[in-house]
Image (cartoon, rainbow, N blue to C red):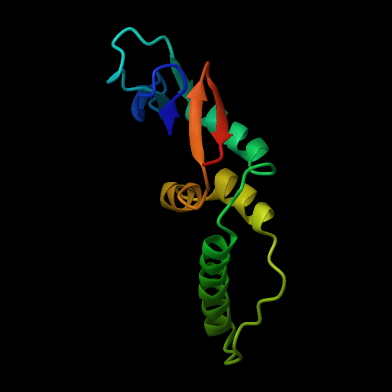
Length: 139
């Protein structure tokens, strides 16, 4: 992801806030590294907002469907094998039609950080963060 204002890379900044009751909250903000322009006014955007925008953008964005389908098949097979193991079944999992965009939305909302990175690595084009909004530029 790059800054739409100056072309610098976007980086994540992780912050922890300890509350009076002892709870610790983790926040991740994304912003410009300012490597191209020291006075860039891109600002920072919270990870929750970025993921919400990606969820909306996923419907319009061009994805590497083959790469994502292979990842989905791996995940489904892994889950099915584990499920069959615990249920004492020996049948091979059957995978029918795959809803790529539905899977992508699920990973963005419920997936681990690693799963989200893998998914975002399958997007085609260039992701731009400008004025706290993400957009996709096809290459």
